[in-house]
Amino acid sequence: MPQARASNLRSPPAARSPKPVDGLVQPPELRRFLLHLAAERGLAQNTLDAYRRDLTDLHRFFTQQNKTLASAVADDYRHYLQQQSRQGQSTKTVSRRLAAIRALLKYLTTEGWETEPILRQLERPKPERDLPKVLSRDQVNRLIAAPDPASPLFNRDVAILELLYASGLRASELCQLKLQDVNLQVGCVRVLGKGSKERIVPLGQAANQAIARYLNESRNVQGKATGDTLFLSRTGKPMERIGLWMLVEKYGRKSGLYKEVSPHTLRHCFATHLISGGADLRVVQELLGHSDIATTQIYTHVDQDRLKSVHKRFHPRA
Image (cartoon, rainbow, N blue to C red):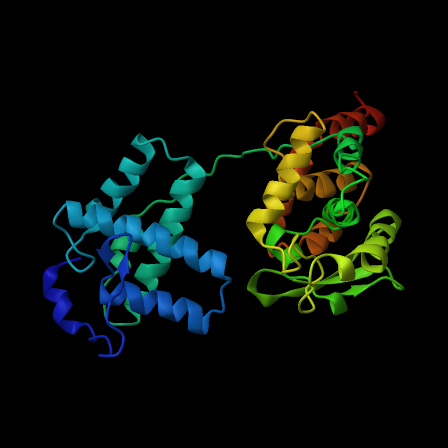
């Protein structure tokens, strides 16, 4: 945007001096935007970190081009996005970074910047449809059977695997579960998802029994249990996302599956197996905590065998 517009910008408060990020000093307008996201939009920390990384990358590019957010025009933003594609970034990553840029530019409009001409010229790349990797039911059973019964963490690990498959929780959602969030009598779990949206998800008998064994036989003797977090690490502290990912990946390798098995793989399995069993798409959307059903619809493309079966059974010319 033209440099002449910079004089219309509000100066940042003195107490909010820019902080170094990855060796760069954040422009004050970028820092104000990130503070706005944290304070007023209530985004999850992982989402805030993604915004920070993407916009810091944009700032680094502009710095190398002797540009600033105040002086950059639409061609500069397009040049950045084109460079991302040339460097091998996926369409999904480029789309995410474009979304971060558009969110920043819309925010700057509220500060007196004339960003509308740039927004009109920034085209959204056509999203590529990456079908999720899904395990068969037999493979899921092998994964859940992988923990060693002789391990002191056996009950915990089985409960985690059963719960991930039974409920489709995100890794962060499972790590944040509290003891009071699980109702074994009713057979459900209360989940706080993205945007602090709460949902209730059924457990199923296998997960219910696995969690009960973990609570009755393992949790209180597992190191020094602290706090009310449901799943604890080996030392008795709340389990963290990276520890959960490493746990699932370890059992994926042990069970002979491809090593990319992750908590999200079991989330994909949960959704796909529900839909293949005839579950309504809106119900699956609710269970997954998706705000947009378009996100849930990808699972209808995964279950090609069921679609072919339905077509063959009901189409008059099949």
